[in-house]
Length: 187
Image 1 (cartoon, rainbow, N blue to C red):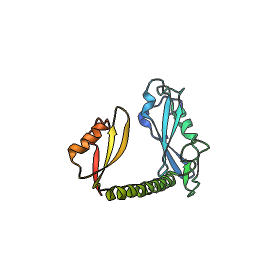
Image 2: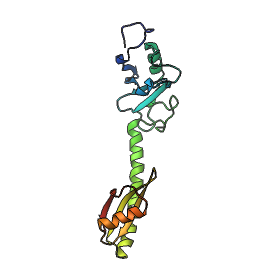
Image 3: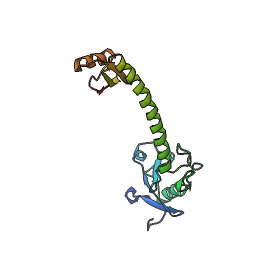
Image 4: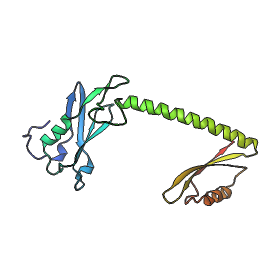
């Protein structure tokens, strides 16, 4: 905290502010977007292992903000036990988010598991397509990104002994503006 009266204007270099909540140290600082005209103040709040939350007061101009304003904003932060592990997490009733009551670590474990499951499913599907293509005489799969004007799409091509010229011709035919964004996988 600070040694000056709470009603003085803030020298923004004095941040970050900290606050203890149940043995957890919350830290906050003013987000850069706060200096954009008409945006109001946004504080970025973090705690070790806990991710990040944003508190926004659009009606409060950063040039008029005082220590008391920042302290009030930081004091509004609520923590709750993580619904998975019981550790500290941002309280979803204070600030709804896609974390839905999980701490950052548990949230990432959940989404990493979902990602791994999806990737395994796609790998299995691709392996079947590769086996079918190989049985039909194809020797390589080309994984490419087709870059059109603002519309990027992934494309899988199966070819027999492809050359760079042949691959680029396929990408050009698909309308790609970049003829180099591909990789070759031998079947």
